Image (cartoon, rainbow, N blue to C red; front, side, top):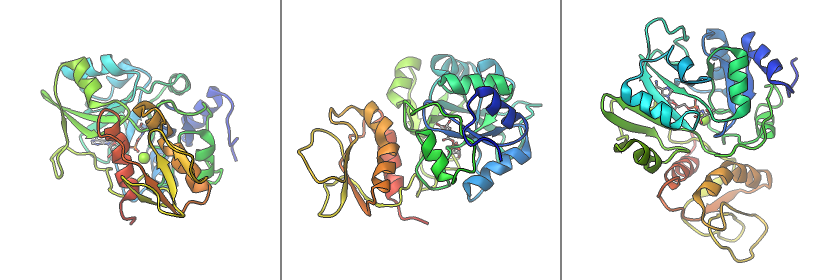
Length: 312
Ligand code: TXA
Ligand code: MG
């Protein structure tokens, strides 16, 4: 067995070049990485996560130059990439002829989701591996996304090597945007708010409609689920754990506060790790305080609604 915690980027890159999996840190969440040009390596991602069907995966690149080998960038797409890469924005674009990615990573679509992560170890790893890396969040399918190396380790019972880069600074997944001619359609709310994109690009970002032609096939309703049950927009009943937001009077011990100062960035960063903690403390039911639906609140509420959805 390989080293469960490869200590150097070079070791992790060697595993990936050899077609093995290795988890790595990004600014959003930890990713379960594989060589995006190697079908067997990408298949191992689905197998390891227990992902129910072949959802397309995000392909991570070292920079825009690498990304341009795989997709056609319209002027608007290039503007977005230049404004936000490296950063928590995945852009869905038409595949380029001769791209060399395995069609397992795109699930046979004629588009690909690309991003350049804003984490020094991820960027070093991409350069050392010298190839694009497919990476979904490094957790068993349907469970909470990991924002620390130990959570990845625990989720896969120590079977996946993890490059440890400390806690993730954003804490929720990247925002996914489809660029369709002149339209920008948000397929998944994420660590970059629509407002930030609109302010930088001067163009409206539409929210995806249910059943729309362009969509992210992976947006299963029950997802990001802790072991405990979840009740939203509420206060705890006796015996329930509480995920608070905002100033809080002293309370029972099963409490975590996403942000005492009502800071949505802090809340996003804390979201998954606090749910992990409440799970580990044995919570059966977690009551979650209301979170405003503005800015990053959109992504936080999206993840919470999925965590609270009936489990399949
Ligand atoms: O922050 C993130 O994005 C993390 C880190 C590791 O980078 N990755 C991540 O990947 O969240 P994953 O596999 O959990 O989410 C990929 C999402 C899925 O909802 C999938 O359906 C969508 O991206 N997607 C991928 N390719 C697509 C495509 N060509 N068209 C539409 N949606 C696509
Ligand atoms: Mg995921």
